[in-house]
Every structure is written in C-alpha cells, then in structure tokens.
Amino acid sequence: MADVELTAGCNACLGRRALLRGAAGVAVGAAVGAGTASSAVAGARWQTLGPLSDVSLGSGKYYEPGPGQRVVVTRPRRGEVRAFTGYCTHQAGQLEQFPARLIQCSSHGSQFRISNGTVARGPATRRLERYEVRVRDGQIQVR
Image 1 (tube, one colour):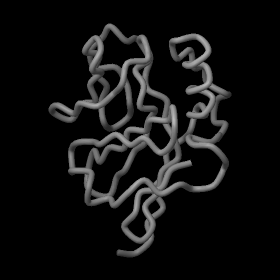
Image 2 (spheres, rainbow, N blue to C red):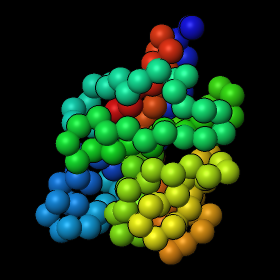
Image 3 (tube, helix red, strand yellow):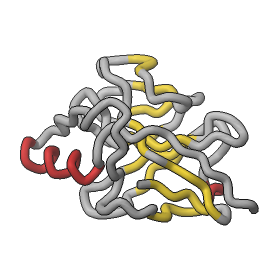
C-alpha cells in the first residue's frame, strides 16, 4: 500500500490529558490553542498503533499506546482516517463502543460522530479533541 498522508488537527496533548485526569480524577482538557498542533502521545514523533485493516470502514477502534493514553481511530469513509481522544468530554469515561457510525462512552452513553467527533447525543456537550493521524505502509500512526 502506498504511503497516504491523512491528518487531522490536534487540539490537545493526550499525555497532558492523562496527567490532568490522574491529578483531578477527571479529564479537564482544554484546547492548547486554536490550530496548534501538539502531541497525542508522549513526544512529537509519529507512533504506530496498528494496521489500518484492523479498523472497519464506517466504524472505529480504540488503542492504548501507553500508560494513561487512549486514542480512538475511525474510518468514516474510504480514504479517510480520523483520530480522537479516547476519553469522553463529559466525565472522562472510556470511549470503546462503536454503534452505527458513532463513538459511544461506556460510562453514561454519550455518542460522538466518527467523522468529526461532534456530539450526537449527550450528556456530553463538547466535541472530542482530534489528533494528527496518517497511514504509512498500511500502518496507522498518530502524534
């Protein structure tokens, strides 16, 4: 498979989120800045999560690239890959269910669209933070 650069903006650092989550008991992530790219995983280098073939078209999969780190990768359409924080914006529940083109929180049932991370159903009121993502040699990479 040819290298394909598929990127999405990154609004906050997953390592920062994990730190806040541990310190406060709840993820209290705020955007680092509009349009500012920061790291989804420790460091600014691309980190390989796994093969693109593991993420079904029209669905998603969660990854835990390191301690306290959680990333959700989705494939809304052929040729599109998105990466989001793996924690709900409501009360930091884990995002690990993918019903009907949605990402669902296992704690309170908030749902987010796989295409852009916007809220489809509450109680969450804020969209998911997005991370940079690309596919190289068939492997999903984030930073």
